View (cartoon, helix red, strand yellow):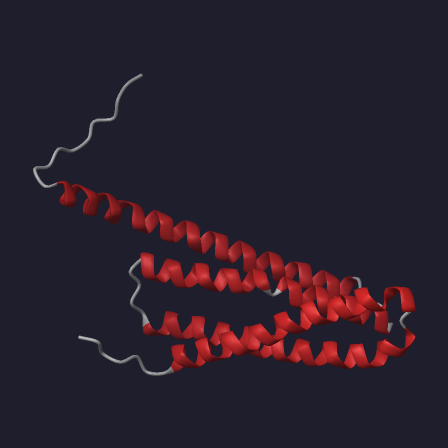
Length: 170
């Protein structure tokens, strides 16, 4: 096998810095690609759920709401990947960071709205659930409700902090 010639330097840290500088833009592009796939895939998935598979029953709405709350984790992961890509790609654009902050706010407020819809579905369905299935029903509500609350409590402050004018930390 042929070996790859490596640049020799009297200072190993210079070589490492150069390697990181070469790798960072490629890694940032990979992070952006993963984030876009997550966001677009989730939007497509939820679009099919809420538009193409729609049924006019409370049971369907409950299942669709809990599935949507659980699917919100993917755009949240995408948001983290986007922030990492901005940082790794050394993009200092204030507009880009503010766009991510708006995305975080939208996810947080969306989580609160979905949590409210979940509560309404729970109140409407709680009297008609079979006694054998009440534990599963309540645990599903507890899990989805906790996620919706976490989205709101964590993402709204992240969005607000991102929209504030950054302080100069020189």
